[in-house]
Length: 374
Image (tube, rainbow, N blue to C red):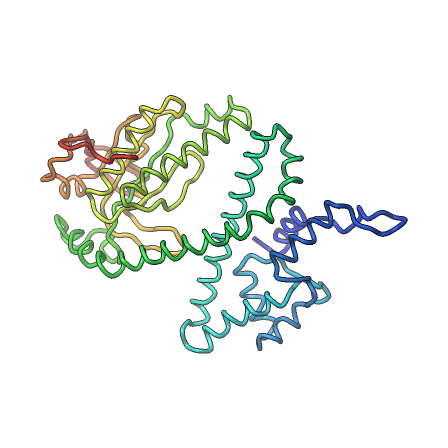
């Protein structure tokens, strides 16, 4: 996103200047006063500082400060814009101190800062839309009215949302450390089974089960739905995917429209999640069926996303799967063939772009109940 795009985005979400002040007395409307009070609370005070003052206060050049602000997703403020508070300076100093103390390189600091900016941006948009939608439904007001009312209702929610955010981050970080320390080596050893060592993904560091689930006929369905119905369908799809993947011990990497990308740490865990997803959408009375595919292999994890031939192959297999079924490749099938919880049915060979001829295998339920959702 360039500077002009960022400024346009900020202009679209930032309240206009106080043109609603009464021309005779100069007093602000109740709505504008509520907005200013909320901003002061969220930003830690009134905007009093310019960008050069904040950079100098943190002991940085303006160029270095702008790198970090852009990583956080801030717009390109001008020299005369009074846009910052003392809390902005303190946050900048915190990141700078990590670099100066040698705990992070500058490159790592920018990457970590960008992760915070991008994830919190998406989270805030998600939360606002969820709250607005709930107000429209529960209070019977229009979308525009709900957005105005939300300014008055947010102050009662800020502390609780912040507390849950920090709690969740700590839990997620702990889970990531556990995966890193306890299971990484075992996963890499398992990924060597049935391989010659010259596969396309051999140089990549992490062994994971990579899966895709793709709703059938989503495009045609979305064209026939109004905005509210489509929003509920998308939310139902994401909620169901997130629940199943979480219960199965996996991680939802991202959703893109009608498709979800997820990973798990063992072939069996990936298989259980994949079968549960296919079954859930087949049995759902609202959502269409899904095509699902899963591949066990090595990946590269960067910027909260995953990359490599394993990811590409899983995506290609998804397009080959019949609605309501799960496909795996022959290598993944070999890793699962002695597990009685799964049934493997070889399918006719297929020519897949970028991979040549592959031999897909349909994954089915064997012994056991599979994932149990509370």
